[in-house]
Length: 490
Image (cartoon, rainbow, N blue to C red; front, side, top):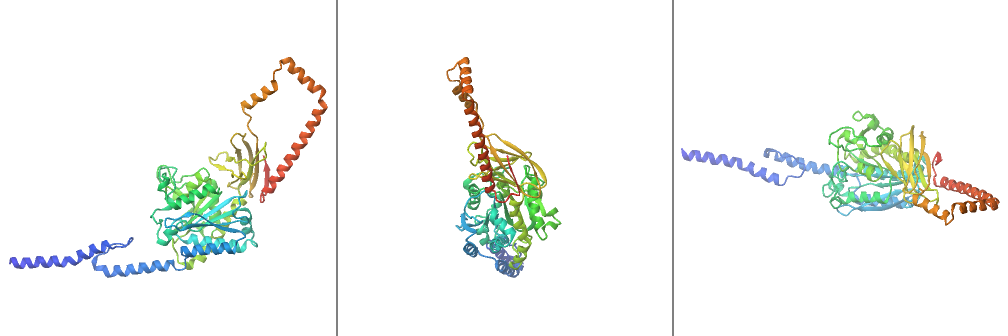
């Protein structure tokens, strides 16, 4: 009897052994992202794994590889050498150059014009943006001599296009970069001390931050996938709760997002997002986002554009996605010229450009003027009244009120230097010299009595010179501004 029980026990153990061995072996070789099934379904698992590998190959068919993209960008610049150039802002973790195309009538030459940047493929598994940005570049090249909108952009904007911020993530078919870091969570955050260590940031992130220190962008947009909506700051909240968290330029951002949404074939009709736009924190809060950092530290108004419900659609859908997004992309860039307030800041004593700053009363956000031409470009909502304040260190601020209609407005400021107390004392000491009160009076009387005619002539000459100088300065200012519909000098 004992022998029978022993045989039964051994047979039961042997019956479980294959299952135990197979489950352990399966766990050790399970590809990332796959679910653990029972041993009885091992043949099904193998089939699904092969199908998954096949589907990865299928979805990449028709999309440019990183090498294809690099060749396409260089070919584009050769084709449109008169209005474009190519340059790199850095390299990815794997050493792939982060190539940028600049489109302008004077590429590489700094002008008193707004700059706009498009960034695609922030997330490696969202490649639609890189394809559409190359289509946009080629469309502008082919149409800038015959299409008014394309001509407006080329002649009045410096457009910079980075098709792929995350080439490594694209080649790996995953969201993060080669270090598996989400690049849209890798920027310094305003609410929480994350990503404050410069050395710990990803090379792609550092490249973007360095880029903004070299070029002063007025506005920007990054292209994503997985939804259909134009997203604007803030992306996070102080308490990490999901709710609408407005930045100081909330109205302006809503306007910019609506420019994109309304120009889109169906984004504006969204049932999930009213008007096809959303505040980032109201959708879901994130931290270390690129658009918030752009607005705070780069003085750049950036949108996050979700342009495709499917993160990686079949390449056959790319022409349709291009047609749906084409006018939105063009109108967003053109809005830098067609709307807002623009101008330059000058010094009254030298007549030279004065790199100051612009503040709109009631909006707690400063816009810096350019370093070379002291030009500023301030996006604002149309149909509103604004109080515009120009300031610069050691100069008196100036204020003007404007009504911003349907067209852009140009307001140039001429600031006067501040007269310090030390300057007044020095002037007074020079005039006082060593005369007593009676001597000073006698000296002034002598000058006034015997040289009255000379003073009169000098006054007339100085008045005429000031008048001519002001006319010349105003003429030079008008030449620098090519596109303003309305121009005011303060």
